[in-house]
Every structure is written in C-alpha cells, then in structure tokens.
Length: 544
Ligand code: SF4
Image (cartoon, rainbow, N blue to C red; front, side, top):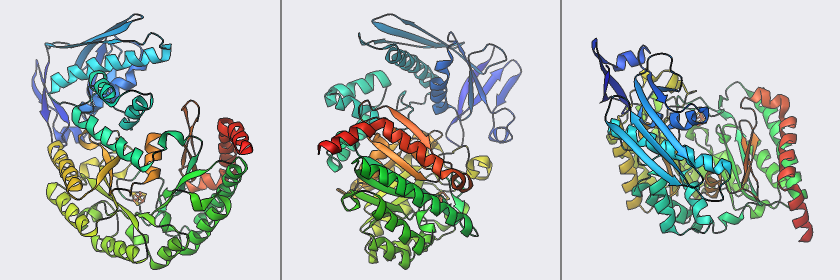
C-alpha cells in the first residue's frame, strides 16, 4: 500500500511525500535537482483514447512541476486516477476517482442537438477534464482559478460567446459552470474585453484587413530567460546585411500583393530580437521601405518598434523613428534592481533604462510601453515594489507585467538549479501588488495571455492608461484578423475572414536559414493570402 501526501516546496509547486512499505520517501529539492526521483508518474485508468492525453497533461501540469501521464498499465505509478465517461445524443457524463483515497467527482454536460462530431468530442474532453481537475483540486488542496482553461488566450473564449449574441450574464455563467473559472478571473476577462472594444470598436469587423509583424533577430546579448529568435549582434555585420536584404524583399512582395488586392493594414509591429539593435542607417532604410512598399502607410492605425534593450537606444535612432512618424516604442526595464539585470544577462543598468526613457521622451516618443517581470531570480515582494515605485517616477503610457515562465529552451530552464525564484505565495503577492498599483495609478488591463510553466499558474497582463492601448497587442491576442509575419522567426497567422479558421506558418528562426530561403517563405505566404482572400479582396476592391 502506498500513500501520498502533498508537500509544498520552494518553487510553489507540489512535490510528493511518498509513504510506502519501506517508510518515508520525501522527494527533496536536492533529489529533484539531481533528477533522480523527481517525475511524478500518474496512471489514468478507464480511458485509452490518446486524444485525452494532451488536455489531461496540461491540467496535471498546473498542479505538479514535473509529471508524466500514462494510459498504459506497465510500470509503477505514483498516483492512479480512474476516469470514465458515457455519451448519448443529449449529454455527456463523466466521473473520476483517485485510487486508494476517498476522492471522487462527477459532472454532466448537455450537448447541443445540432453539434458536429468534432464539437461533441470537444465537450467530452472538457467534461473529462472537469472531473480530472476536480479530483486533483481535492487531492492537493490547490484551487485553480482558471479552472480547466489551460489555453494561452482566455479572453478569446469570452469574445466568442459575446460575439455570438450571448448576454454577458449568460456567458459568465457558462464560464463558471463548464470551465470552473472563478469570478475574479471572469471579471478580469470582461474588463479587458470592454477596454479592447473601446480601443478598437470595429474589432469584430477587421477580418478583411491584416496586421504585419516584422522580426529582426538580433540583440546586443542574449538574456538568460529568452527563447525568442535573438542572436548577439556583435561581429555579425555580414549576416545582418544579408538578413536585411531578405527582409526588404519580403516587404516589397507582400506590400505589392496587398496593394494589388486592396487589402488594408491595421497595424505594424517591429519585434524580434531588438529591432533597434541594427544601425540608425539600416533602420532608416527599413522604414523608408515600409512607406514605399506598404499600402496607405499614413492611415495605418499604429506602428510600434520594440526598443526593448535600453542599451540599443541612441539619439540618432530616435531621430530616425521620429522622421518616419513612429512614436510608439517599448523600453523594457524588466527589473529596477541592478543585481537582477546582471543575473539574467541583460547587460544594461537601471540608470541606463531611466536615462534612455528620458531621452526617448525628449525626442518625441509619446507612447512608451515598459515591461516588468514578476519572479525574476532573487526577487521577491521587496524588489518588485521597488520596481513599481521607480515606474511611478516615469509613468509610461503602458506597462506590461509578465510572470516568469520557465520555457524549455531557455538557459534559465537548462540550469534551473542556479536560479532561486520566489515561492507561489510570494508570486501571488507580487501579482496582487501589480493589480493594486496599476489601479491606483489609472492603468487598466487591456490584454492578457497565459503560458505553460508560468510561475503560480498566473498570467501576463498588459495595462495601459486610457486610450493608449496597443492595437497590435489586441489583434495578436484575440486573433480576429490575419497577421503576416515577415523576417526571422516571424510567425504568420492566417485567419479566414469567413470562418475564423486559423492557419499557422512560420519563417525560420535562424538568420542563415532565412537568408538561404526567404524567397520561398515569401511565396508560401502569398499563396496563403491568395487562398484566403485573394478573390474576395480583388472583387471588393473592384466594386469600390
Ligand atoms: S532583449 Fe528580448 S529578445 Fe533580446 S535576448 Fe533579451 S529577452 Fe531575448
């Protein structure tokens, strides 16, 4: 007989205290780090269909830092859970129980009479997820405020319900009943949607326009938590030159297609990497290309340039931005503690962030976003409050508060043991500080997204002063229109203007592959565009 008792560990996730015939085995931090006994094995009985594996794994990961789910019976497991469901034309009924413990859950969900097989199966998955989450909540004592919603974009779900004509009350009730989402999160989602529709009243009607993302994959140095396509720029002049050649080519071809088919651009976003890592002359030529190639640039609602790393900002580059009427930039402090910046490999100081912020203001940047990260190594409530106090002195138009996520490919994840991060309670306390500070200072949340392996299962929230929301951020989060990704690591999302179906297409992440094949990637995107709305766009522009 084996019993398990949850133990809260430093990271805030649960490790297991395993009691069996041989005595007590505590999965200690040390043993976890030396990777001897750290993966919790969960055996699911009663369900064999592999399509359940991913959604159930996503839920298990909300509770356990490292776990492995299996439907097969071989080998020993640390936790066994029985799941079952029955389905008829009218409803799906699911039940769950933890083996060896008096913990059970049940849920019944009615099915829409006209549901397709795909829709009905989605409901089955949600119902099984519901009972799985319920038994794990009872077992661990951890309550998940996002319920069974593990996706990146929770607000999309509420948008969909409201767009279909459902009242707010009915939509909220469904989120609570079917997804187990708590009131606090539903209120947050609704506030965000209200803000978005104020900033972009025609959000639901922008499917026949596009936004453009331009990825420039260079940075002064690589930060420890980064998984973006970002390459240290020093000594890369040749490669940068070839990359920019490809980028100009893509801009010309895509712009030509948009002009030809009468498709308007809503927003343009230069990201990366750090787009201000290239020289002022290179930036100048790039914006000149944008004006020459893209349709009706003067009427694009918003053009943003990430100037994330303060060490890339110079007077010369700011003058170039101003010359091309670009006044929305992002300068990212991440933290206002120099030791932290050093530990995460940012290679700039707090003083430099403040100095470059002031310089940007002086040069006419009137809409500045700043990013902060909750849970950076060595940081707790004290350091985060300090960051908020410093932000108060600058009052940027928008502030994006991220929660640190351990992404698989980052240096920080590979060497997790080297970085001491705050526990779950402290992360929540920092998030609470961010919520109250932004409220007190007139900022409103206007977009949010979640990530896998995010500390404390919290979220990243974009706040802004009224009227200063980034339209591009709303477009990328809510997926109401096509975003064409140009450049290195740029992901395109083709959203069918009629059905909303999304097709993803990614440019290569490394400059060498991009430089070798940029023509091919451009062709592919043009093909997608023609398939999606080539005919429609051509005929509507003709009619006009
Ligand atoms: S500045 Fe941003 S893109 Fe560049 S390495 Fe750091 S986190 Fe990555």
